[in-house]
Image (cartoon, rainbow, N blue to C red; front, side, top):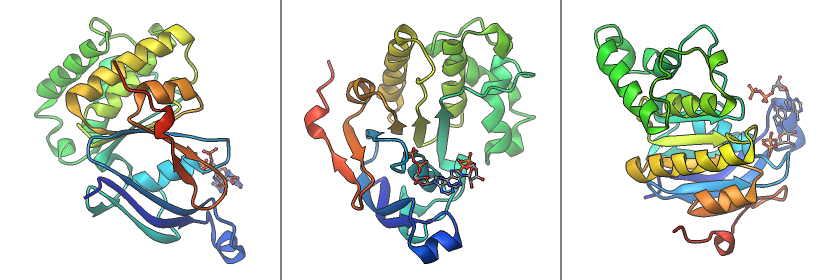
Length: 235
Ligand code: ADP
Ligand code: ADP
């Protein structure tokens, strides 16, 4: 069975839109297998962010049904980790404390946070080292470059070992060199842990480099087209 399963999913952002038949996304059918890394590309306004909100349960669909790992979605952080174009680290927290944040919020970690803080901090250190941030644990966000902040935000997204990583233009604000470095970092993490990834991007090269499958979303209904032909094999 599919890990991400959208069956005929429609979303109108409010009741008036629903009555008028004005849907932000229409008739989405999408099945993603366990451990797959998919990218979604498409023009502004085609519904990519809406798709992400549906996949996390931030918005329930107006019609249709969504199962993630066989279950109805149940709110943003439980099963997924998220990172966006802006790293949005909390400025008053160190890198380490920023990365720990989901463990302070998400069950079952939350309840044990105080007792297990050392263990959790160790886990965060290991993750930070994997993305090249060893030695930066106690720095504040303003002491890090944009690329480093983005690395930290990816660690924050993964610290609670989510089954699914949702990335919305995560590298959009970075220079080309930093971006390509981070592609490799992300690919290594994914190869090691095999969480599902949904990457929304405007960068076709990025989608082809990273994803198993690239979906092109369009404004017309039945909106997903799989572009296997532009998904090149990885080295
Ligand atoms: P993308 O992320 O691909 O740019 P969106 O998912 O943001 O696309 O938007 C899809 C459609 O839904 C667009 O027509 C957009 O105007 C509309 N939309 C997005 N967010 C809202 C909202 N909060 N309220 C009403 N309409 C929205
Ligand atoms: P969030 O940042 O929580 O995802 P949204 O991007 O959905 O929020 O929208 C932020 C605000 O902008 C909301 O109040 C929403 O209603 C409004 N908005 C966004 N896109 C549109 C749109 N296309 N038409 C009408 N309102 C919109």
